[in-house]
Length: 282
Image (cartoon, rainbow, N blue to C red; front, side, top):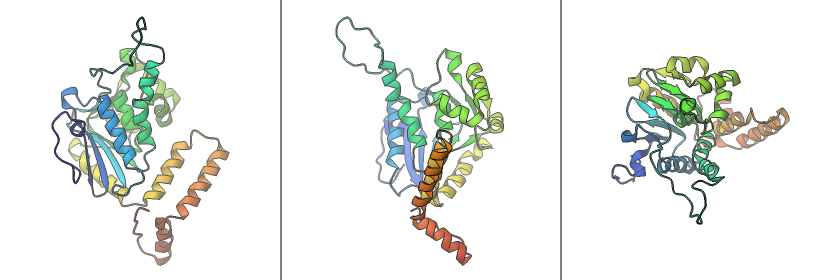
């Protein structure tokens, strides 16, 4: 639990999405065991708020998203939770055109961009099955470490649903169009070793080693040149969405901005002085 937080009762948003900062790493942990770590709207909103709240601050310099237990990382949205609808006049349909779209824009399409646009590097530590939106939650992170028993499932076709949570955006960027269609059309389990082979994760470790392996990577990132990593993430995330000329301009601005950071100056000084750099994060 983060320093200064008071204990909270079970089933509160603070308990179902736990947050603490250790060694400048922000740990966001899904904890909803009664629903198999499915994400409710309240949990989703808390995660997005926590990620957005880390931007522009200095307490944390890297982020980890994980879950409790060993069986499930996140099976997707908690569909058992009712959603409020806007008041409507007599005779109005139960669901009006545009309401489902608005639900998406105000829901999963706020959480995934919060991960992608977080100024800090974000690692997913996938401790168990990640399905549907739960898979996309992990895949939108900058780095993914999986326990060897974990798996991804593009489960939507099994339920006659359309992929959401930015799955149709992130998956082709990771595995290509043909493979993305295969994974989404057939909705078969993707075990950890296969996920590593096709590029859905960076590393697979024994389940008992997941926290240690994630901590090692996260603390390495947290001790690195934070603003350089921020600008690198910004460039990479836009690299497939813009034309070459636009990326040239983005790259030039990134170099310009980075050159004004103290860490950039330290990098050059340490190289000239033949010593290890000491990164301060700004």
